[in-house]
Image (cartoon, helix red, strand yellow):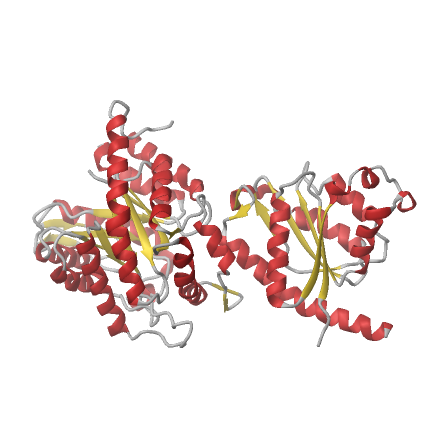
Length: 361
Length: 188
């Protein structure tokens, strides 16, 4: 499988740092569809949208947004990022993404997670005390739904299914990734189940995450899973522009506004000073922020460490203007993706005698 | 029109470049973004034998005396050290042994430290704060501790560090300003 490069967006409605006005949800959603179209044309591999349930985000139902994108795109994979599975019904999630998969000609994917924002739990009548159990049980049901129909299933947090007929059926196995932030137990879960791992690295030194990827591969190997299915995706914020300086200058005010809106301490937003943002753009920092060449270099450096299969960039967090977003998407597709695909393919072929997945025990 | 806040940072590292110095530079930059400052950074290892050979204040001369005076006359002190053998460095303690015993009384002091792992994070509370408690300094409530994982070389990568510094600085600036004004009024 060729190395994949994608974009994800949470559809945040961050007030513009100059006007203090947030985009309307309608404007944001149409911008997202337009970005997906551009990403498809630029030859990127995945476009993913997050799920939040509060007024400062436009996307609460990823499948609906992705369905709109499906109509304007032809080859790009369309994914949630993430589906908050803990507070949703796996049957409904499966039906929606199966529908999306059929509509898009087999391009739907689910990245399932426990949710880092918790508004959806009371909204849909779930108890946060069941946080861990909810995810485990619902993930179990979602995976079973992929395999059998009709289905008979029993759990403790959702009503049982007896010969439940879950339709429509997708024409292939719907990909389900497990989203992980920084919890080893989540890594172990993904490894035990043999599900692809979607690892978010949203700051600091990315090297610190190497043990997570090792733990994932070791756990999966121990559980006897097919190494070919053990894909790893690394997901980090970033922005691309023709030059390093431009990438920082254009995106920082918006990133900082988004960071302030979503990151609180003592009841107040915390700023992301420009020097902190710059630090994230250095070779060891987690953000994919800079010129196309810098993005290429960082992906290659991370590949040396993680041997991952997919890189997803949360592009232009905040309210970066659509014009600059389109340019960034174009740069990723035309200048970054072909180079990293070629370089990584070359690395893989020279290493073909060595195992593709090295497990350190 | 208020005068710049005189900020003196003391770094207890035994060499340069130093992660601790890098942290202190970030603290100074952040302070400068909040208020006008006149800053001085003292790397103790650079003071040399004139400092390390001195057993008592009377043995001190020249640049070392200037460094001690700068701290004694500062409006705000940043005291920073790497963790050595579970505590501040010998250089760091030696310097504050030579500072006049009451010069830091009621003076705002920000505490900062760097260490090899998070296991040393309480060095600020267990080693530094008692020392400055003895000196009756006005230690800032939020100390700043960084472990090696927060760095790439001497570049600070962890975004939470910038937030922590921002918060610590935001807390201390009004206090330093108020105390400086009060002190000026009582002298003048």
